[in-house]
Length: 517
Image (cartoon, rainbow, N blue to C red):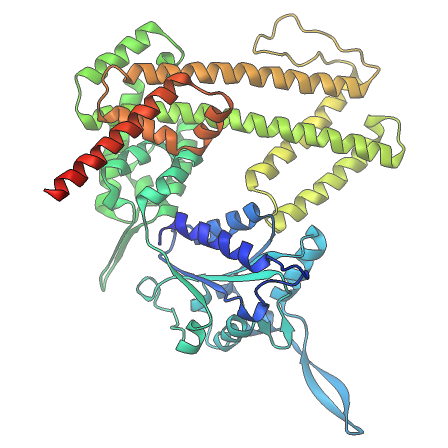
């Protein structure tokens, strides 16, 4: 099973285990809810899909890496209690609450979510003293005499034995109580995520033609060579930041993330070619509608190999994806700003404070406390948390400017000329003006982005070669693009997408006829 299929299976399991019957009881009793166990190579995204699944299902999330824990932190510390049996008092050993179970109850208390996902990573690499405790927890969902609360789904993950010498094999009795899922590295399953996540275009372009190098593992007695999905994504982050800071990218940098000498050297050569072509080709002017830029890009398409055409495709996709990400972030920030304003107004009414600037300090403190809880228990994505935090900061700045009576209304477009002054006697009106300006600016950005998409499609359309199919399919797989195009439809993309579907169907029928012969 690939990582995309595994995520859906986790979501389906959460939905099934938290479903209730007509009497309000869980349809599947806790004793019959087999814990999920994902076994797959390191760096494939096991932890990430668990957090994403919990967020999408709207349940709480608590995560532990078990190699960091001892028997005492898992089961609790012993203490002596006194109990009566048959008229006699006895000293009995009991245990304080497990740190892990306590974290679940704390999540319930702070988040208000009675259902959730408890994820235990590296479950098959625990210490010798902790192993029996973990087997008991997997089988009975109890640590000592403390049971996992009803409504909480238990999931675990680990690496196969060939990836980790400290792996412990589960016995048959334990395996027969688990919902066992084996994961395999699959570039095609990872690619849609990579497109939406803004993975560096050089990496996507390289892996599109070298799929066998997406996940590499070779072990000998003397060394290990490997490259993982996590390694490619982390390399993408550092490359983008190095480029933003104009820092030199060297072969050694590649080797720090791709622990395979031949692969690191080969990708460095490709990256150098990719960045050189980026500098030579006027992609951004072309997307902006510049006639000379478009002509140069079309001339490049007519006289180069397929690999270089593919390089241009990914350069265009990277530029579009960057703008799509900026647009989506702007949408999220606007939504966060609207939500913050609504909560501020409600809080103002609840406290009975007439002045927004006066109520702001206590409101911001309350909101920041909520953010801490949501981050600790993964109740929102990291991007959502960052957007909300940014909007709280912006709200503080706006009201400071309002109080100082030195600000002009934010512009409704990128034109910064002719500012309009907002009367400084009503903070609510001032904030509403800022919100409307954000909406207007966002609409302008959407128009520009729609124009860039059509310009890109028109540039590749005359060639109508395999690279055009790669462009269309990559756009179709990109969640950022599909969300944008649903809101702002493109007749050109729809027409070309229909052609692509028809061509795929024709090829499928041709293959079926060939098989019949």
